[in-house]
Length: 452
Image (cartoon, rainbow, N blue to C red; front, top):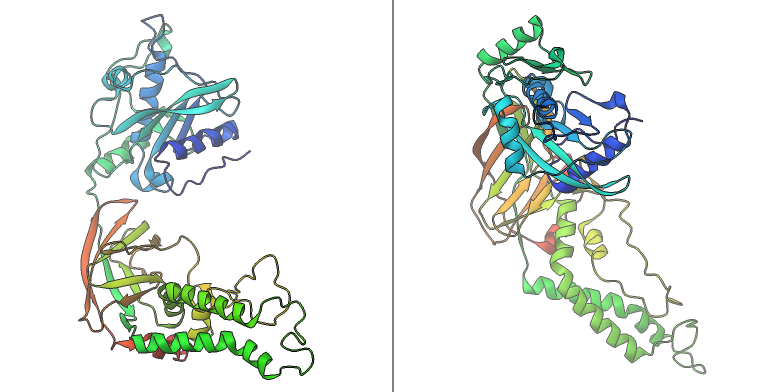
């Protein structure tokens, strides 16, 4: 069975590492990979003090992971390497748990101080109850790293299994770790002398602007009056058609509310509408205005993986996820309002009717955009891959100015890539439109933002 684990991102917390442990238990021996090794049992402090085989195995794995090439390693789990002890494709037996400081003291003499690695223990459900799994994480290799080797001899009772000081190990694509060959030393020499390429990206505005949206009390009153009139229209129609014999209940099968109780229900409905106006306005605005779309350019001759752009905006604005639809803004606005069972509409269903969002769809598929409006606006745009010299249009978003009139909005941005060290940052300016009342905005042609 294949390893059931997504290698696009690295496991970083206890829950994610536990998922990796469970994935190993459900895998097969052939699923040990370039970035993952497991061992069903490991004794780091045996009764025989001369037996250093457990420590030697850990050191060998750490060195092998550290001696990978950066561009190859970055293709999986962001370049990290993982050694799991106490679990295999056959069982989860666990290992004896030791103090982390003591564990590092046992391994450090063999691997030296330049390799970046961290041990931790993960509690997992073993075959016979809860057990501890040792997880050793080796940081991604980097251009300019030295050639790592055993810093101390690891003796064995069988001389042919002893590992001499200076031994160099390589982690291979087939999931094995073995002594370096001449061709491996050539590649590691290239890694040593090769200068880490500098991250060089450009971010430009492709289209869109900041939309100042105003909320005049007169327009809010117009909307509330319209909602009241629409809500009362069925009742007024019924009263206008009052039957001379049957009275006000004529022809209203299933209607149990009196006119006065329905008017009270409408009053409560309008109070709820007033409270949800901001969310309803945002939902409509996100669907009908032209979003801001940024273009990211790779200005290096290196393919860049998982490039993420983070925007920081300190102006009085609010960010929204852009949606794409084909209806007038008022249609989206109305969908976000509370529901009212119209007078005379028959029996009320036990389950509330669900709003239909068939005409609303996310502009981009894939990883979601993350927006934080709690302080300065922070937008995490979904990561993208870029070939050398390639331009990629990032996921669009909507920016609403919360003041009647503002100057162009300054945006600070930072970008990082999983296969290149460092980050690049810059600033860009977003133009700001003339202020518009939300009522006028909703009356605009929804196709205009896609025809520009």
